[in-house]
Image (cartoon, rainbow over all chains, first blue to last red; front, side, top):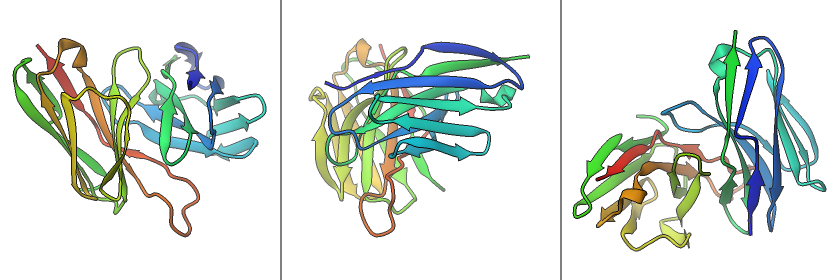
Length: 110
Length: 117
């Protein structure tokens, strides 16, 4: 079966750096997405990794290790508006099927 | 309208009612999806449509009936639902395949918050 694990909640301080980890055990892995979802809103795309390594995009970076079934999302210079749920999702099997983790609720405090 | 829109945003219905959720994408995509999001649970894929053809039914009960009349519109028809079906129902779309498509980011609508009494 498909299994994606990420922490349920994290708390960090404004201006700090936080790393959200995601481990996956899936069949037919084709890449990994990170989405951000504010309460009551649609998930919005943050990053996509298909090859091993780090992808940097402004304050957000995402890392993938296919051999370890592991990814992380790194958020730098945290702002209050970064308080949201961060969803890890793997492309699995054939075609365009996404399998999501439960999401990590990040709370940024002063 | 831009992106992916969903109506209604909120819906309350009884177990004997019949209602429909509507999704429209204005992105020219060729694939559309229905997801269910319950509290403390992962987003669950329900249905996938590629080029208006259903390519995935993720063991969804028959009280949920999807319809995709064209590549821009997707409906979810609901009948005789149960209280445990109360959740946020999200629609998404993506562009599958084709030259220059490096990955298939899914764009989500704001969802319909469904409450079944």
